[in-house]
Length: 137
Image 1: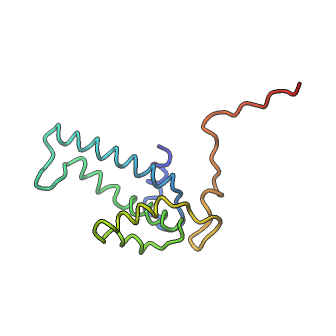
Image 2: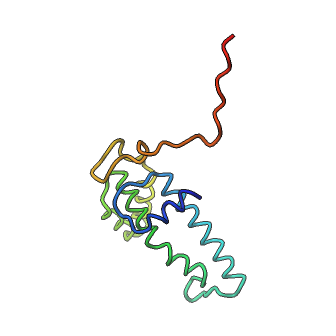
Image 3: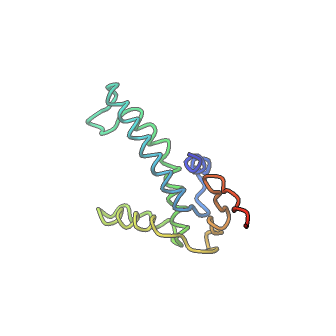
């Protein structure tokens, strides 16, 4: 959840770099939110077949449109590519597939022209406390 909120806090920051973890966790939480809100739309009768969207799901999608573009741009920057690569999404079938592959690639190690390496800047703490080594006998 922290990665999702961090991406929302940088909702209009198109400079810098985003790690794979930041991008994919943001994507996951967005997907879960849209699915949940779409379910609420269908159950409450607010889903429109003509529009292909419901009130809550559509409103949420509009609210996170700019943060989604921003985190996508920062993810492309992490792989050493410019934001123009987002235009690949306009190519039917192959474009979005190529973007998924790019988003899965590891970022450029070290600093690149878009900023410092986010992995080096913020090392992750272990998810659980590391026990001390056993005493020598």
